[in-house]
Length: 558
Ligand SMILES: [Fe+2]
Image (cartoon, rainbow, N blue to C red; front, side):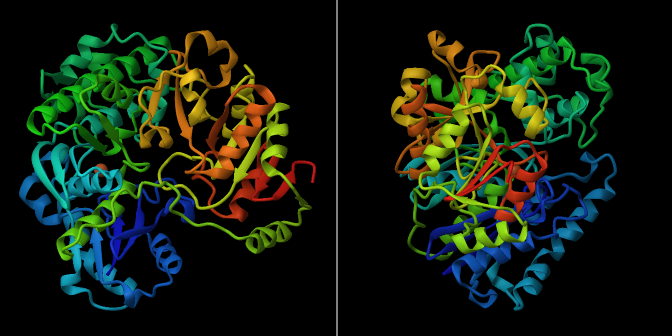
């Protein structure tokens, strides 16, 4: 049975394919259409499918549109009608438009696949899709499952229980109780785009949470086992609500970041930690299982994630590489599999390397059409190491592209973590990001505990989802990956998960005695590169010193 999963309701459009219950491919549309998040989250476009991602999934699996048995879409208009009230919008007519477009979704699927799906098209509740995207890849037999995002149909947070092939919803916190929306509003208030939560996360480390603590206590009221968001403070999609202005002062204008802005980010992070921990306690009481799965956009918050892990409430915490909406394409397909098949889907498939890969012929063709001169490297790991250790920036392109927002060694820019100036160099030459944002390290799993307070290693440590303290005595040796609060959002690299990347870091360790490299996504203010041609474009327009695509090496001078 072939099940195509699709997310396109808000943002992070993506497609995924289950073949006989096995997840074989998943990819985000942004990597193909080169538009961040695939499309704008517009009420008028949930029927705008990730067409290129879908076509890629079919091609990858060697299937035609006729071979698709079921289509799963990670949003349920029926549930929306039941739970969501049109008056929550600034203009209730927006809901009509949204539902009209959702009504067109099955027809769009029929047209794209060239046949009528009828009963084989399925709307899947959004938070159920999030929950499934974490539970089945986790490999846990049973788990408590927490979803926290902006909004599903109406829910901002959901508690659920997973057992075997069944996910049972326990409880939801509906709009306005959305932590994700608070982040969107504060992002906008601080002059960033609504989806720049990772910038606020970075900025928070520079602030004092006490200054705006009381203000945030009235925005997100946290109890022992629950939380409530003040509707006046967020207002659906109204970025500059007057209540925020009253509580926090005038919004940020221009490019300057004042200490006050960092204090606001710090108080937001603190309130988020408290709210999510309250939910974790509630979930633990209602679903007394030792394993936790966590999904939804808020599960990209590596500071909160590490608090959950450190709390010791759960023996293992699993967060997928794509806990945000892209991951619901996978989750929706799993839900339909469970409904249609007696047997559970293949569980424990948690690899992030689910996207396109390119063979040597394709890489050489891209180099040739760019008119560049290449060099074959006998040992790319050693050559890349030597460049990095000499202070250069190396682009590392290999194998299947990552699914999820982090580059995990297959579409990565690598640099020397020992250099205090490397952050500035990376920012000036390639990334063009704000100076306050930290860069992350990829570290050999077998040496991680010598350098970082990792705790028990989890599978999700391989997805850069936890901010761990750097051992104080080693902090001055790796300044390029040390955040202001002494933490680093590390990726553990195991040989079994990514042998070539592991080999590279091993070479760097052998040469320098430091078992980690700076790893940032291979892009410059755009979606992460997908194809060799994308890689070459970004390489040429930026200050990257060398590009390694398998054993093909391009240097800036060539
Ligand atoms: Fe979501």
